[in-house]
Image (cartoon, rainbow, N blue to C red; front, side, top):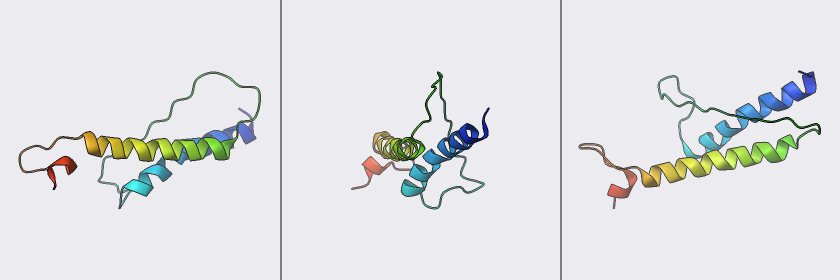
Length: 85
């Protein structure tokens, strides 16, 4: 793997965590149990726009967290966001 491409890949792997940081505070604790997986398939010959892809990855993660919180249901003793009025 070319060094420049490897750098792009590493930046894109980190990008979703910025979306998590936007919606979860505190984030990146050793005890919180969160994990973010990134998957890419295919081959491209041109250099990707890493800034655009990174921003999109952060937005997708941020939106996914909000959707998950809104869709969650509570369990006895632990209300979900929808249960709080």
